[in-house]
Length: 401
Image (cartoon, rainbow, N blue to C red; front, side):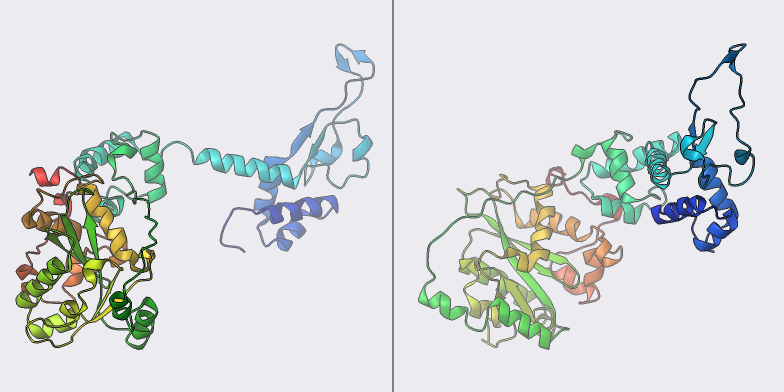
C-alpha cells in the first residue's frame, strides 16, 4: 500500500469511474493501491445528497410513496452505476470526483489558517526574540540560534508576523536594500584602461578558476555614502567563508586602495598573504585600476595575486559581496553620511556582520568559517573578533553604544 493517506484528483476520478462501472470497493481499492477503508471513507465523506422532487398526493403532510432506495442500504451506498439514476424519483447520493477534490482542497486550506501555537509559546517567542529583533538580527540567524522555540517553518513564521501574532511586526525586520538607479554613461575607456583589462576580463576569470577550482577568491568593492562627500568603504569578501573586511577610505581613489593593501601586506605574513589573496574579482571602478599595487607585494614588486574585472554594469558577477553590503545598509541606511565614521566604527559593524550565522555555512558564522582558511592570530591582527549570537546588533543603534 502507498505510505501516505491523501488522495489525488486522479485517485478520486478512478473511484468515480469504478463506481459508475459497478465495481466493488475492494476492486477500486486495489486499482488505486489504497486500503478498502480509505476508499469507503472517501465516498461516505464526499457523497452528495439529492432531494427528490416534491410532487404526488399528500397524506398527513407526507408523500404517499416511499422515497428511500434499497440500493443505498448496501455498499457502496451511492447511486453511481444505477441505470435508473437519470429518471429516479427517490433519494439519491452520488459521488463526483471533481466536487470531492474541491471539498478536500477547501478543508485543507481552512486547516492551515490560524496559528498552531499555544499562548505560552507565543509569550516565550515574544520574550526571547523581541530584544534580538530590535538589534537587527535576521530571521536565519534567529532560527539557527533558537531552534528550541522556532520549531516551525519559516513561511509559518512570516505568516504569524504578518498576521500580528507576535509583539513585533514586519517593519521591525531589516528592509531590503534599494540600489540606486544605474547611471547612463557614454564616457569611453581610455587606452590605458583598455590595456589594463587585457587578460583580466570576467571571461578570463571564469577560465582561470575552472583550471584552478580550489583557489581562494576574494571579491572587492566600495560602498559610498552621500554623493557630495568623498568618504567611502573598501570591502573585501572571501567567497569560501563569506568573511568580509571593511576599511574606511578618505576618498575613492587608487592611492587610498593602495594604502589599504600596503597595510594588509604588512600585517599578514608573506606566505599567508599569498594563500589568502590568490584571486581577486572587482568591478570597473577607477579606484581599482592601480593593478600593480593590488597584484604585487608593494615592497618587492613580486606578483602574488591574479586580479580580474567584472563586465561593465554586471555587479551580479560578484553578487556575494553585493548581497553582504545589505548588512552594512541595515546599520547605515542609504543617505547616511560616512564622514564621521572611523575605522574603529568599521571594525565594530564588520565584526557584527561576520558573527551573523548563515544557512549557507551550515549554521556557522563567517568568522567561524574563516578559521578554516587562516589562523585566529591573523584575524586578531586585523581587529577581528567573535560576537556571541544573541549579542549581534545590525541596525543603526549599533554605533550609539
